[in-house]
Length: 114
Length: 114
Image (cartoon, rainbow over all chains, first blue to last red; front, top):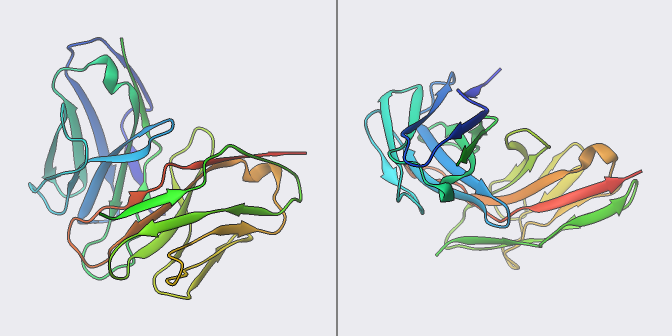
């Protein structure tokens, strides 16, 4: 069964802390994505990666960075957490090349910044 | 640019009622279209998809038809159940393009009562 695993379901951090959100997929997918989900705003793309060590900015990259050192792992980093980064973070992956574009999602990481 | 607009919720229905959630899109070319569902406390999962005009996606009693002439992909179910209560997201993506992400609507919350 395909699986995208996010390391933490719930996190509480303080303003200014550095935060790491980890995502691992076991499907050998080339493409991986980080979204944030907020009420009334839906899902917004933060960053994505279509290959190891490659990354592209999404719609709202400010305040975030990412790391993809291995194909199966895609990390989201908040260098200095702020209260407006309190949100649900969703990781997803999909195959590259010819495909219908279906994304597989993790269960989400709910981050609260105090 | 490309975008997805879906009807705002919440949608509140009684069990066995008919469901329609409207979704329209703005895009050039021929994107693939998706409906994702998010049950309480879970990540998103694919409900159904359609990859070309006039295709009908179906799953778990839900259906949606890719209508290029009206740029729509409305979700329907003939008889909803309490277990269908969830948030539904319409989305589009261009396949075969490295690094392209799903573009989501803002989501529609469905609440079904017995």
